Length: 250
Ligand code: PEP
Image (tube, rainbow, N blue to C red; front, side, top):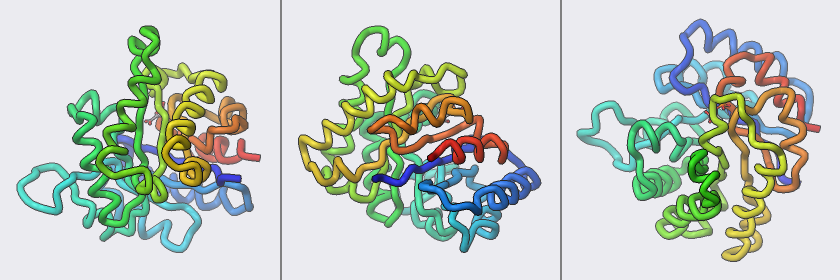
């Protein structure tokens, strides 16, 4: 059975004091054994703080994005080697806010994914459709296209060390979670797509669901065959809310 991963994307939220109390709460509340891995994705300035607190614990951490270049004139961006300097294990790639607000195309996302992997980070590739696309009946073609951009550049084997997060854009930060049936249907589509290329990789691939996950809906989502965890935004900012999601894992 694939181990559930509960990942918290803090986005552009937090302060030094908040980071410390949140991490203290998570460390305190996650001592019991469960079939679950945890990870947090803080804003870049807090990575040192997070590393200091979490090193040696079961909770991993990562960056919220990465630039495809190794270094140079890219003001405001962060290289994979810099994330590794702070012992990041993961990095989010292609989060819908990066795609919609900062204009990252499928091609940009594929480059970031490749650079992350090449450097030794585990990319969490975010894909998902807008409400308009869902209502237009093109969810699978949108998600398929987003995956193809990465598969064409990096190949299916690259997913031995990567994670996919299905995040319907209409469910992110809106309080409108996809139903477990809706999420499972897209997760099955994603797994089938990988299975057509490599059955072993498809079987091992962790596919997270993201979009208004909370302590009340997490258990139903995680119980579905192809949902291997959650990428959590809002509910990852309070230790008790994030732990409620973790504790929803059987
Ligand atoms: C996210 O930021 O990836 C996310 C899923 O946010 P929320 O849980 O707040 O919908």
